[in-house]
Image (cartoon, rainbow, N blue to C red; front, side, top):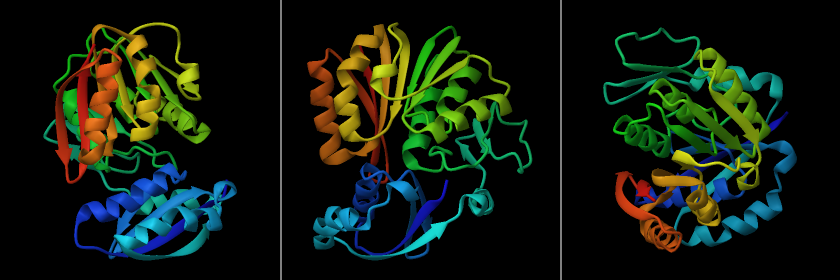
Length: 278
């Protein structure tokens, strides 16, 4: 599959202004982002790219952010080399080491996750993924059934398994992400992750002790009632992929209507993750 790379050059006063632009692109179907000097790169499958429609969606943002972009075609055969050259290992506190197959292992970390860097979103570099893993470090997974919505590379599902979850269901609407999750599970020696391609309609009719959903505000709101129905009594729901203002209050209100209680939130720059309980 060929991809379109947009190289954005931005000029802004506050970090959240660029985040607004990236969030708008995510909702328009861009699934991978890479920060560079004076801006960032955004990627979308070439078959899904509509420049005229994108410009219409971005027009209101010109009022709060100065930006321009150039369009490049990234052939499928070149993508892995491009992505690998920009992939660096990360660590979450002193507990989690996330690396690619071509990086040295770190057995001194309690949890090491190997991610083959492809087009799937979720290597741990983005603030939303990092905060979700931070939440997971303080959560008991032993003997638990887990649902990972918007699984991307499968990084959260893999961490849940390494923390003792007995069964994990991982779901994403992107076939590339589904294949990536399966491949990364094998790389990490994980055998208890079941992957489905789709959205809330493919969630198995069973209950889960923990639900992880790192997507975006609109999809989280749309799926909130389904999460509540699939969550066991006293089950925990972790959400990410949104901003503190105004998204957090909107999601708290939506969760309350579904019988979910807000417990706490984490914040990294302008991004937020939140914990709820049924």
